Image (cartoon, one colour):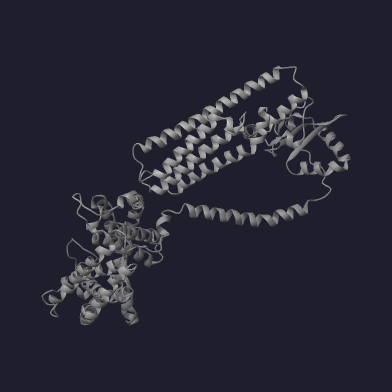
Length: 637
């Protein structure tokens, strides 16, 4: 059986193999870009990209081999051996990576795949070298029947590689590609041709020849519509009529109509229907293009793998380190989600939410410090603390301004201007800190932190936790085993304040004990919230009681700090810490501020009066019972 028969038999398989390989390679490259592939990427990402690209290369080489095959597939031993070796290497890699990706399995996969690719490349070279040599001998042999030569040439022209060569030649010469077997044109010796529509320029043909040919075509009713369409849209087709057949002289696509003057024929019928169809299609095309751009934009959304997380999805059998990773991934996504709104500054709650996310990341690291690899985490922890502090400075001023607005709502209109010196000074200070915040969020160091921290979170191997020591002694690591002890320890710390808190605050004017209690209550509340998915349903009431106590203590702390800041403002005339000399300002110069100080002192007294009720809800025996029931839910999750 001749080689042309095999080419015709396997041309479809070759085309499918080649196109499949291209699709796999393009998909692998796109996935690598979207997932930001690097050496710190997760094993799933690396495995997917490598398998797509490596499989794509195998499919492409297999398609080229089949396109040029000159014998039966079952007898092409070098091709089959190359295909088998490359596929074997891929399978070894797929089933061994990453857990068993060790020596000598690495060598087996690499050698097998590389040898298979080498055989496929050698087979391509040998096949096409022999095929080209055979074609030369066929053309030199004059005794071969002309019909046989014509059939052989037609089959070779229809091969996959010839088609690809025609497309590439068309792109290089900026013409359009039309195989002769499709257009039906040919030469007297039976050979098919490819016509590239930029061989003859209208500038090289006399205008009379163009018009005469056009008039001859118009005399024939069947060709009148084709000539009108070709002149009115894009192509000029010039033909010489012979007694036996029509041979096209040129088929040109005019790329620069403003340079070449083309005679325009009289159009007998205006293509209104075509224009109407184009007008109706334009909105649909624009909408489709817009949807494609939107989908493409969604694919490249920064840190989309974190922003899409809706819950931590912690399990009772997770290790504490694994649970910490899930919590950090969730709150890191929340921080990124509110970053843009924080920069824009239209809604101050965006800044609040971003700060809370950073604060909770810091808290989970502090709470689970004993279960984390702090050697790797320390640099990230410092950056998280810096982010929280930068955001917190602006947020504290926002809260202060909100309290002033709330205070002024209950005051007489004529007393509002008396607070202008204070509010103006706070606004100036806020503008300074907000500028510092924006510079920080645009700084390369912050962007570097986000990238490194995201890579660290996605690298699962960094979050594996050993369940035993070097001597074989087991180490408690699971949430179900460790969390109860952690929660009871935190509750014991909070309850211990009952012995040191008194109603007499004269010995503690800055309420340091209350401030420290607020921190410990916050830690207990955050820990319960972090693990609420595996705890019992009683966690809702526990969080409610702890939040009420935390809000009471937090308002106390804010009021104490505010009173100190207000006194400094009366002393120095500016908001914030001042190291300069005293100016002439005194309390008498700020009557509105003086009144506001008295208002905040009354607020502090009210908070101290309401503290016992909020405190009793936490130290009450019922709270401890519900606390135990919530922990018992661990064993039912």
